Image (cartoon, rainbow, N blue to C red; front, side, top):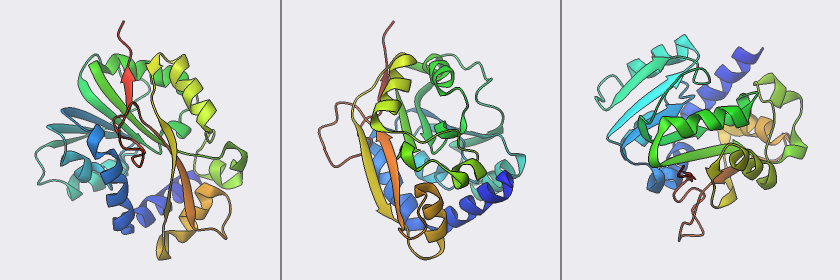
Length: 222
C-alpha cells in the first residue's frame, strides 16, 4: 500500500512541472556548494537543485526510484545517485547544503536524524527543509504514504532546536496544484475538496519575507 501510494505521488509530482520549478525557485537562494539531497525519489527536483550547486549527491531508499532518477539525469555530471538509508549513514562534514523536501515526516525519530545531519554539514552549512503542515490534519492518507507526523510551526522549531540547529524563519507556503496532481495534493492536506497544498519551509534571517526558505536552517557552531 505504502509503495503504491508513494509511487503514485511521485508520478503525479513529476507531471507538475510548474510546481516543481516554484519550489526550486523558493529554495534556490539556500543552495550552494556540495549538496546532499535526501529522499530524491525519481529525481523530480534533483536537476533543478543541481543548477545552483557545485555537485549533488542524491540518495533514496528505493532501488527502482534511484534507477529511474539515474537514467533521467545521466547527462548531468554534477549529480551522483546512491541507494542508501540516510538515517544510518555516517557522513562527516561533507556537504555545504542538505535538502529534505517532504522527507522529515517519513522519519520516525526526526530529532536524532536532524542531529546526524548537523555532523554531515561543514561549518556554516545550511539545511533546507520542506514538510507538510497542519498537524491536526494527520490521518489515514498520511499513514498510507508513510508519514509519522505533520508539523506545526511550533513542533518543527522544537525538533530543530532539540537537534541543535539554529533555525530562522519557519513559514507556511501554499501552492495550488492543478489537474492531475489535485488528488495527491488533497492527500497531503487531508481534504480532497481543496486543491491547495499546505507546507512548511524552514528559513533563517532572510531579508525577503516572501521566500519560504531564504537561507535555510544553520548549523550551530560548537
